[in-house]
Structures are given as structure tokens and as C-alpha cells.
Image (cartoon, rainbow, N blue to C red; front, side, top):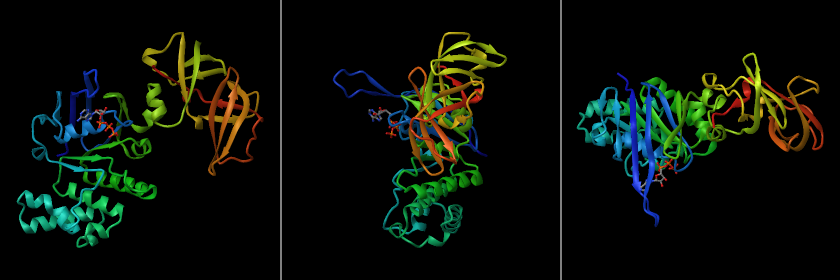
Length: 362
Ligand code: ATP
């Protein structure tokens, strides 16, 4: 049976080291449910508390308050070796003097598993990470990506209820990182083990996750599936952290059917991407519009913004423009597979679909 993780108002406070004393709230009352069999990401900038939360799930750090449950079992006060978790660290922490098989089987020896079963399970774990033919090599005879696979096999061999990954790809080069993203995704799907994955790399989270919690200064800024978070960020922090965006300040001018009509210094816009249970009836709002959501169009389109190009960068598969709109508003716009490039000073008209104008809650 796979494991659902319930994190209930968990906190970790440390005494502050500064001259004024006080406390650092590394994790400050986080509640989350991680569904059984999901690959779930804790994503956020350095210092947001993601490693502290992962280590509390592993049992290496004792919480100041709150509870952690694996299914209905409260494991908050269990020592790490009684939780049946497998952990993969940023540095793979392989023993250089042991073979790959020796490294992978070490945990089973500690658990006093019989020799035959141990060999069978080591083989099974090495097969799962596609490293069976490397069993007799030493870690120094492996590439970084292969060492990472061995570290994963070592975590899987104990048949953990929960797999915990702490920035597992950060020591790999860009190409290997891409390859290992698909590998980890495949292994999680095939084994069905509930996995918690810590990273500050939003692309990693967006491309692999079933669910993501974006953390900011010890609290959860937003939880959702990758597309929900990217397309409908709730706050400036989430919109900005999950990719490039333009913030446009506007005044709510009324409604046209389901869409909110907005007056901005750059021109008029419509939005259908807002909190429908709590729709702003008036006042000032901030909108987030992704650079790829703008379409460069012919002049005189409805709801179009007209300005001029102030910067053009050719990036191969796309052109990146900075467009100056009325009211001192500058927006970044991506044009995929560009035809003729626009030049600095060229007049330009852009349009954005109302579903891509996201009215932020704060
Ligand atoms: P990074 O990506 O840099 O590893 P993180 O999001 O994993 O960052 P944590 O390591 O969880 O962040 O730390 C969260 C906050 O708690 C930071 O401000 C950190 O300085 C503080 N902190 C972590 N461990 C301790 C400790 N043992 N004593 C005091 N403060 C700590």
C-alpha cells in the first residue's frame, strides 16, 4: 500500500544568531497533504525552509510544533530508522571503497536481510535505475549521472514507503539533469512510491511534478499542479518565481460578461483569470502577463496595446522584445519561431487573450 503524507501545522523555530536575539522561523505552521503515489515538490528560493521541512519528514530534525502522519500513523516522534523512508542527498554520499552492489546492498545488511534475498533486491533496485551491468564497478569509475542512479537504487532497495530527494540533480551538468528528470519521473511512476522532492529549480518542478508547494519564508505561498501554478499564480511572489512575467498595474473598470475590464496606463485589457469567488469589483489591481502570452498583431485589433520596440534579442527559436507602451509601461514579449525580426524604434501592436491576464490576489 502506498503512503499518503499529512503535514499538520508543522513548525521549526531556531533561536536567532543576531545581536537582537529572537527566533528564526525556518518553517512556520505548514499544513499539506501529499497524495499517495504522487511525486510532490517543495519549491522555493534559498532559505524558504524546504530542506528543513524535508528533514522533518525524514526524522533528522525534530519539529517545534505540529504533526506528520504517514497514512493514519503519527510518525512525528519516531526516529528516522523507524519511518521506512529512503533518502537521496545532493552529494550522493556513496562509499568509494565499495562496489556499486556493495553500496546499494549496505542498508539491507544493516537490516539483517538474508544473503540470497539481499542479492535479489540489489539486482532489482539496480535494474529499476538501469544500472544492473555496473554492479561490480566502484563509484569513481562512474559518471555523475550514474552515481546519482546508484544513490537512487540505494534508497529504493529498502522498499521505502516514502522517497525523499534533496536537490538530487544539482551536481549534474545541464544535459544530464534533463535526462535524470525523465528517469526519476519514470521510476516514481513505475514504483508508485510517494516521493517528496526539494528544489529551487522551477523548471524541474514544472516538468516532473504531480503537485508542487511553493514556499516563501517558512510558509506555503501556493499549492497546485504545475499548470495551475504557472497559469494562475495567486501572488506576485509565485508569478515571479515560476518564470518570467510582466506586472501591469490597472484599475478595475467594470465587467463585460465574464471578463473584468481593466484600464491600465498602457491601454485597456480584459481578464478572465481572476478569483471568481472573490472578484474585484473596483479599485487598483496588479496583473501578471507572461511574455509568451502577448501576440504581435496587425494594428486596429480590439483590445490591442500599441507601442514601440526598445530592445530586440534573437535567441534562435524565439525573439525577445522589450516593448514600450504608453504610460511608461515596458513589457517583455516572446515571439516563437520569428519571421523577420523587428528593429528598435519599430511601431508594434500586441494583443493578449483575457485568459492570460491574471489578476493577482496581492
Ligand atoms: P537552501 O536552498 O539554501 O538549502 P532552504 O530553503 O532549504 O535553503 P532551510 O535550510 O530549510 O532553507 O533554512 C530555512 C531558514 O532556517 C534559513 O533562514 C536558515 O538560515 C535557517 N536555519 C536552518 N537551519 C538552522 C539552524 N540549525 N539554526 C538556525 N537557523 C537555521
